[in-house]
Image 1: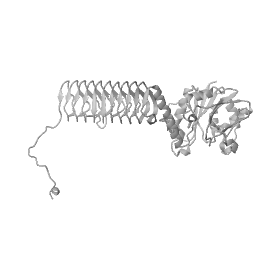
Image 2: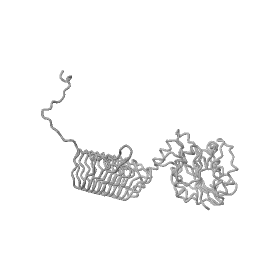
Image 3: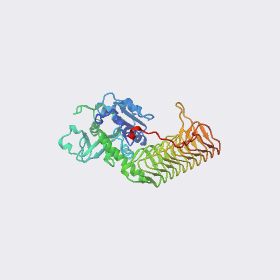
Image 4: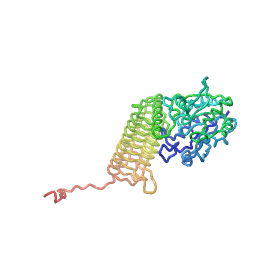
Length: 457
């Protein structure tokens, strides 16, 4: 039986007090809905059907390239009504898992176990036991321990409200059963809605076995209705990511002060200090050291690289044993070769820095190519933008650039050339030439410094 996944993502989420659709609020740097979609794909689902309503256009726009059938729910009349909108696209022989766009962290293993229990003679229900079940539908069982129904809290008696096993909302059943049972749902309840959970009682009356599974932790089935719950899930997610990084070979100075907002791969003997933030796709190879308060985004840090404190690396490739920072900004398109250095208060953009080359202090290098063993003095800038177009600066092997130099691109400085400090370079420099482009110094003897008459009173 092929597996189809229906994701319910039509709710407004009014308690979030946000104009952003609830399912687009992020956990770990990704919208909650995208977490659910990723897990559905990891299950090997043949198709994903996403039911949208409130903020439908925003949800679609924020989910480019995702292989899903978008199903529109014009009126939010309950979970049963939402799933019914997807029925026309579900083949009769399918197993169907119903997931929720605001329950983002259910594991693939938990859902795979649940899906394995779906057949023509059984359906699967994910429950959880909670110390405080307030707000959740309670699981009703008979004297043999078999599930007989789910009662929503607003419809439950005092005795039923004392039950601590609750419904997560996540369930699986055959498409044939869905198509038989959903049309028979009633909205005769306290909410005036069509509850998907009512299919449990229908299964019992038709001798369809209700098999129950539970997750390893309650956080797997924690939904988000407000920003407090969102924060709780974020911390749990980050705790798990920190544990994974340590298992894979990273030493974290404080596991509670590392944030992963994307996907991070680490090698062995990686050291990560406090308040590191990783965004997008990040690869950290063996022996890399990252100082405190750094942001690494969509980058590769190769073996033995060092990122000193308060540095930002984005969209870049930091080569083996290269050094960045402290207080450096390495912008997209930068490639740092082996043992190269970008020092304190240096910014690079779309530049290649050759093996052993150094930009040690207080410089901006953009749209540039530096060869091997180049030394760029403090206060150097590449003037790469003429107001309309960007232009390239090329520095050959062994070039020495004196401090406080402006390189007006396009310009090429050939191998082993030298530029005197304080120069503004507007023309190419040949190999081994010395270029000095600054006003001649004059020293005037017996200079009388101007005075302010008020100072003499």
